[in-house]
Length: 228
Image (cartoon, rainbow, N blue to C red; front, side, top):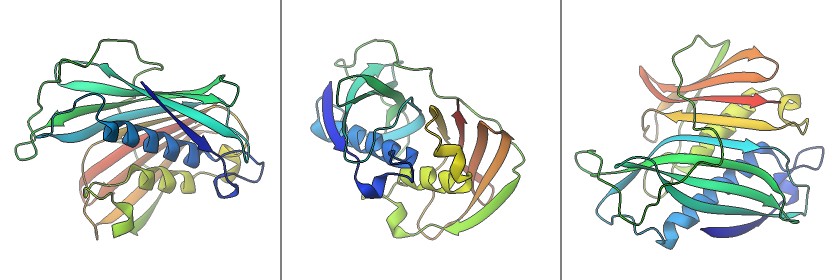
């Protein structure tokens, strides 16, 4: 396990002085990336990492200028899949969020999964596993062309692109109330720079929104945001 410290700058907070959902998720993604870069788990150097699904739960959001910590560790799920788990704590050490991201190591050429290394340990997840989604008819859709800035250095889509696009579709009051939030993402495909992507939204009720991202007939991602 490794722990990373983050702070809430003015640019990361909303009108209520709380860190935005988008910024907390971005910091979680950054912490997981830093953990991968640390090489602590001994991932295969000849493999490519594939993100399958993610789930983030945010009970409370830190305020502007407050520091908070994100701890990351690995849990083995099956012979070929594993989870990067996170726990978010405030400056007093109280838990204010958690999450899990499901991954597998695949052959970069054939995309066939490799078996996990022996260093991966069995364990329980800090929250419910990420949801899987079926198709749905959206209430509204907007199209956007993906640009180079939407991608990471390895050529894969930056998942912050999905989070930002989905949060932009939701009414501001839905995410600025300070209520607890759960986000689930089910990744289905990889886009390329220049692709025209359709982002769709369906409001199930005031607390539950469904999303998709599609490029042509290919579904890239399905997701949901639930507030309580």
